Structures are given as C-alpha cells and as structure tokens.
Image (cartoon, rainbow, N blue to C red; front, side):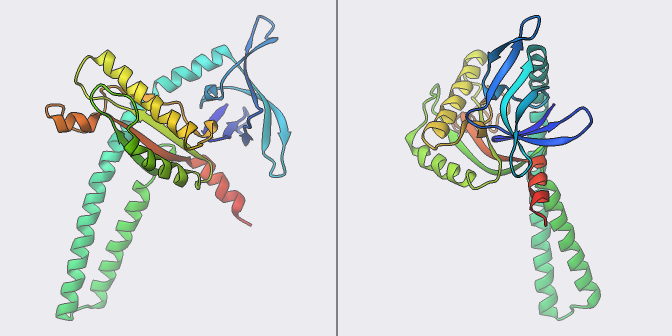
Length: 286
C-alpha cells in the first residue's frame, strides 16, 4: 500500500507493517492489470500512483537497500478506491486552511509575547532590578514561545518549506510574464530540498458562474504547472497533480475590485513528506 510520496520516492507499507522506499525512474513501467485472468496490462501515468493505492512492485535493490522499480502494477478497483479516498481530501484541505489561519493567529500572539518580553527586559535593565526569579521567568517564557513555534511549523502530512502566489486578470488563464522570474527562483530553491514535491492549486473569484470559475481555476493551475515543468525543468515525478478549487477558499471579499483580484490566484508550494524526512534523517545517523 502506498503510504506517501515525495518526488521519485514512494513510501510503501506491506501487510505485515514493514515500511520500505521505492524509487521511480524514467524507465519505470506503470500499468493497470486488466482481463479476467489479470494477464493484460494497460499503461498508466506515474500520476496514478497516489496514497492509498495497493500496488505490486518489481525491481532491484540499490546499495542503499532501496527498491529501484522496474514495473509497478495495480488493479483498476484499487485505483478507483484510492481516488475515492483522495476525493475526500478536500475536507482535509479545508482543515489545513483552518490550521494555517490558526497558525497566523498564534504567530501574532507569539509576536505580542516577544514584544512584551522585550519591554520587560528593557524595564528591568533601566531599573536594575534583574533578580534571579525574574530571569528564570523570562527564560521560561522564551522557551514556551520557541516550543509553540516548533509545534505550529508542522501541518498535516507535509512540511511546507516555501510558497509563491501568482495572480491573474479577470477571465484570464495565461501566465503573466512578470511572474516567470519569480517562479524560476522558486524552482531553484525547491531543487535544493531533499525529496521535494511541488503542489500547484488554482483559485478564482466568485464573479461569473461557478462552472466557469471552476474551469478558470483549473486552467490557471495547469498553465503554472506546465511552466514549472517545461521552463523551470522541475521533474514530472516531483509535481503533484494540479488542484482546482474554483470559488472555494476566498482570501478577500468579492464585493471590491481589489478583493476579486486577490482571489484570482495560483498558490505554489514546496512540500516535503514527513515520513520521507524522518527516514532521511534516520539514514544520516551513524
């Protein structure tokens, strides 16, 4: 069962709970088993290898005891089941958005605490009343702030390591040339991350019909994805399937021209799977 995926790496967990990493290459054959005897195979894209899919992998182990996949096979019923699970992730994405908003509120509170701490330190210095008890209280407050920052920096199954936003004119889907240098720099930073994944999600304002806005958000996401693949040389195995959120998750009011412009956007993120990050750190230890 595919437990997670980051770029060309897939995390598998067997029926006896053994976890392993499978490496995909440009020569890896991906296929769906067909026929009554399961003897025929329909070639599929690597994008079909999503979490929750039961697969059979054939390949050879490299020096790091990672399985380099030659053939990856799966059943059509298993793919349909996995896709159904993925469809249910929209609610999870909404929860992630809520978590991000909560993170922003927590960061504001933490900043206020830092400013209060700084004022307290300046006052104590001016009045020369820094007793041992006051210093212990300040140190404890600082430790609490740093611990909270560490907790809120981890969301869902991925670390969010970088983010860029591209905006579009009303009814337009073509990528404006002024954003191309920004995306190129974004891609260069992403390539320095171990086992990174690129997430591209398109949005639209609520101006117009819901059907048209859904299509606009999809086309915008695809155009940004194509630029990252073709011009920025991001490998296909490191890019998730583009997401189209339509009118959902508005970031500003649609009652003003400025608010509508803020909602016509594509958000691009660099993600690192927490499971892969943990395995990488464990492998690096002597």
